[in-house]
Length: 397
Ligand SMILES: Cc1cc2nc3c(=O)[nH]c(=O)nc-3n(C[C@H](O)[C@H](O)[C@H](O)COP(=O)(O)OP(=O)(O)OC[C@H]3O[C@@H](n4cnc5c(N)ncnc54)[C@H](O)[C@@H]3O)c2cc1C
Image 1 (cartoon, protein in one colour):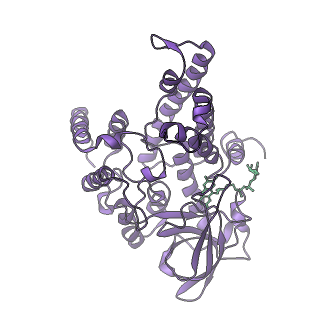
Image 2 (tube, rainbow, N blue to C red):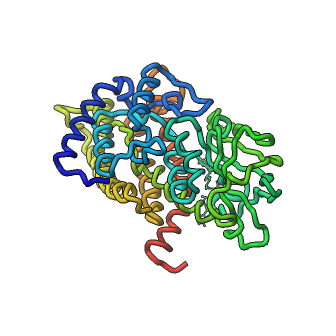
Image 3 (tube, helix red, strand yellow):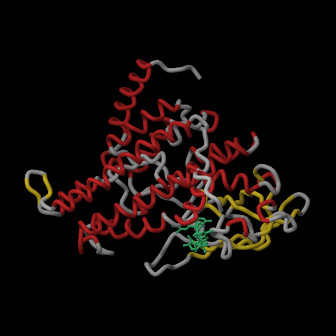
């Protein structure tokens, strides 16, 4: 790839600015408030508005659904510098992501690294075009933090694997088209060494899902059952019994995503929410304690975002953050909980409404509850602290 000069990049920025201003509908420049505001692609996702459809279509035509992937996979082929500019310009005017996809943030990086050529050509273009909704089949009833203890088995039956077992907490399994799954292929080996990474079509005979109802009502979680599911051998990614290597690699990307690395979505600043809800004079909040609490959160946010920017640059040039992703996951999610706690205290009883015509108020409590889930999914905060202690700080076990 040719190196771009400063003036090339300047031109790219002004062209990107112009294109986004012309093509991103005004309603797509507001933060998504609920699930229906997100487009996930695949056969079970529908557009919630014409604007959402137009925005997705425009970005698809521009090949900016995944702007930094190679053009042969339907990506935009942007350099890290160009991609940064696009991200900055999208954030500047508050553009929503046109597609939410575990295929982009989790499976894609693993396929780039471990899949063969045919597998890349088969699966990556359907991610960039939003044709496949992927879900993640890692956790099992007795394998969460201790993920390598998983028991779902895939037996070698000559021309296919026969998969039996169950997964739990599979987000959106009832809607997804495909699942990337960890399965046990060797029961004799030590537990990390008998795992393989398999892609399974959710339409296969023997796959079923059961949504898990939570205290809060419906939820995206499902139990996923595999009852003698025939899976073609070409759906195995990487080497048989070496799936743990892929599992860990994918988790580093999942943790960066949950921690907020590479995110373009804009959220309202805490001080803006406070000014809308609390007494102030000439744009200055009257409560000095609240002022310092907000300053602390916003300064931590700013510093974290700068660190994220650095790691995003490195990730786009092919450097994997490895164990550092645990730091991002831990800090990003705990910071998000702290921010949501402060916002909840600012919005007071309005923020506690679960159902209301006032959509802003509803999203506070729902977002607050969801932020707690961020500290669990992709590995809990306690588990991340364990990894940071051992793998980054080199503390004794
Ligand atoms: C919102 C959300 C979405 C999710 N989506 C998916 C999905 O799509 N696909 C999927 O496969 N899974 C998904 N999960 C499951 C998630 O990965 C697990 O919940 C998580 O790994 C923890 O496992 P567990 O629930 O079995 O808890 P456990 O492992 O039983 O942990 C229970 C408690 O013990 C603590 N603990 C356990 N081991 C240690 C240790 N070694 N050191 C210190 N403390 C420890 C934990 O921190 C936790 O507090 C999702 C979870 C959430 C909350």
